[in-house]
Image (cartoon, rainbow, N blue to C red; front, top):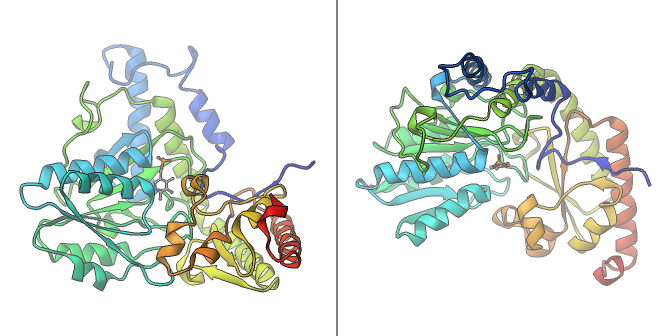
Length: 393
Ligand SMILES: *Cc1c(COP(=O)(O)O)cnc(C)c1O
């Protein structure tokens, strides 16, 4: 059997070969393998220089200063560091946090943990397209609010939030810090740390053709935000994230970010055209509901619900031919309908019968046509048998 058409770039992307080559140069004896913290040795010095070059490249790709980049093991760690670090620092002033129901688990679960520790958390409900209204944020702010955590690009539906508007709201309330999860942003839409006005921003490499297991937290110097470290040891990363920096990982992240940011203008146009073709093809099958406003979502993601079929049967029917997913990698394992789509107001049945298509560098028009056809065949069959899940399983 042919391997399935790969149409899922929202969960992870393959590492770009140029990125892999840069990483390989930091591992073996003929490369830069030293400990970047041991700058007394020549090997360490060379590694230190690679890490600092990577820091500068990541900063340049996202509109930050190099000393605002704190490398982490990914966006999950960056989200945890931002949320627990900022709240630990500011808790004498209040114990209230605001986030949204559509955030990634890497934000929602730390917020749940804060609640267990006695904090209060407000979970904002977005509009039907997944957008959080800045006015709703303004209305939710309280005298004891110390942190707002709202994502830039949603990983399931691709909705892009107006982060600058959130920042403007937070700025009017003294002492409220804004954290933004931008794990899905780099290379998928324009992102500029200083222009967006956030205090803290989480990044991940593997959604942007970089390696898994590396990311960063951007910590604004200009805003003077302070966070407490979560991890103690050698004092690396300005004491905010102790532990030997993984030279090959940060070099990979920097190479990947540099590439995707350079390619984004042309790639964005190409993917937007492919996505519209995909949507029109799927829509023609009937009963398709698009999740997220077309003009307000990144071109790399298309999320569609299908009326009149059962979710698990639909995924089972298309999965051998195209690599798609329902919801995020985490929620599809639990089998529950996507909480993101539920927050948009979709009922359980429609939320379950949803497919998230990811379009990326490897996606061609042929792939899109194959996906349209595969979904069409699955829908026709499932609708014929009345959507009974037992047969498809
Ligand atoms: C993937 C993702 C994360 C987690 O990032 P890791 O680097 O895998 O830890 C967090 N937030 C969003 C929006 C994501 O898409």
